[in-house]
Length: 115
Image (tube, rainbow, N blue to C red; front, side, top):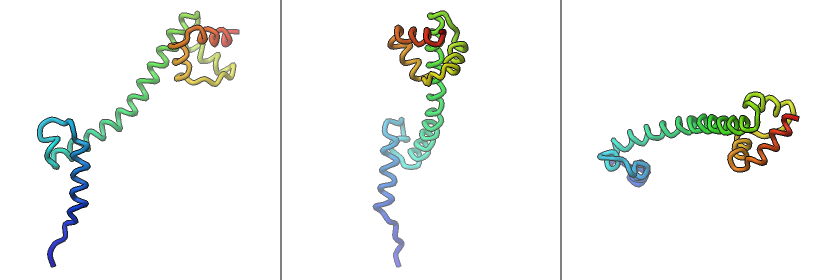
């Protein structure tokens, strides 16, 4: 009995790898062996850097909130502590958005917290 290779599934698998490797340099975009190795590594990097991006965005939000609170005569740590005590349920992302796009509204939040 001849050996069955299941060619359609193998071809689909190879096409999927080469499609992910589009834009790579050299043999990485055209040969299955190199493309498999490189796309696996690229997937690991993208997985890790999604977490790094979240970390960096949080740092950016904190920096923006800090700058805006200092412009309104408060420090970041005092502001966040007062927010918690006043039970104002705004997270850092929302606060940074308001501070960056609408400084007047952020000033009113700071005044509410100070009172």
